[in-house]
View 1: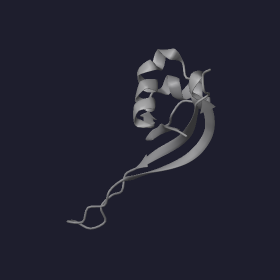
View 2 (view 1 turned 90 degrees about the horizontal axis):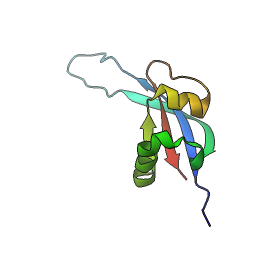
View 3 (view 1 turned 135 degrees about the horizontal axis):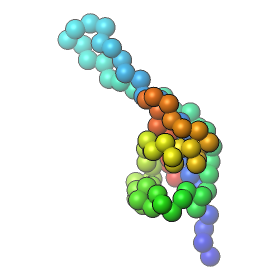
View 4 (view 1 turned 120 degrees about the vertical axis):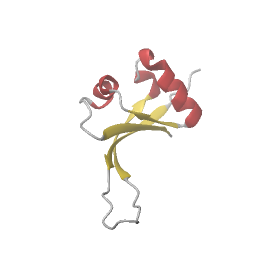
Length: 87
């Protein structure tokens, strides 16, 4: 019997920080908001490599607009990406 595997879907936005003072380095950061939870088997098999990475590393970042459209119903905006993580 196959176990149903769920994937958490987060929409993340990368934010670049401009250094306010020379000689001080401030790292850029991303903020993520949970969008949904989907079944792993709903990710199209055409993205088999992404599924393999997800199973191996337990999370993967997605920048593919077509896959984002299938998962969250819209394309990614500038500096956005999806983070998928297994429960």
